[in-house]
Image 1: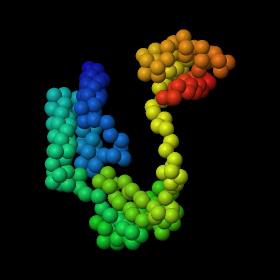
Image 2: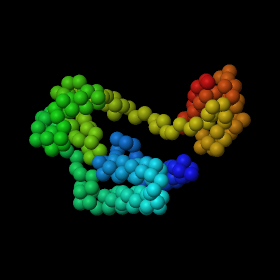
Image 3: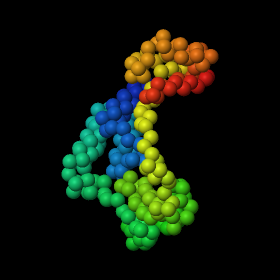
Image 4: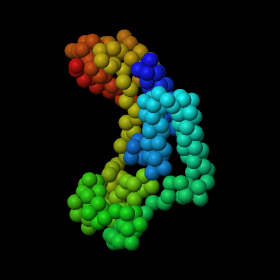
Length: 223
């Protein structure tokens, strides 16, 4: 009986976690603020406790998770609507390097050491810290770097060249099956797609992935 209760509570907690994660929105781990991170851990801990502690009434765990999720959504809305609330909840970016000068005071404020800054710079592709003009610690904890003018990558604007937009690619074939719902977005019908696949001496069933860009170029990847 206890085993059955654990299974039922585990399924319930999983479903609740799934629903709450959809409500709280999609964000990469690197984009989470410290507050979001703490809320996520807390909700996960409550779910784990609810699924393993058979003496705990299931509705108490669900209520606690819902409250934390609603508070997270509320704080997110407040931070979007009010600048002061955003500063209190998420904090402010911290300038670590300004015009090539490292601000030791701000390193202490950000609670990172010089070695951490150098390591982050190397991870971003700057092995010489002198190549960095600005470095800013974002509210997510990630450090953004801007190189000095002579070290920044070239772009088409430097050559007075304006390339055409590539647009989005559409998956028209996946794992040997034609994605018929996406053919309209790719502006191609099924017969024409099959014909173009055969023009490349291939068979649809042997295609692992087929993509089409906004210019009508079809690229195929074999299984």
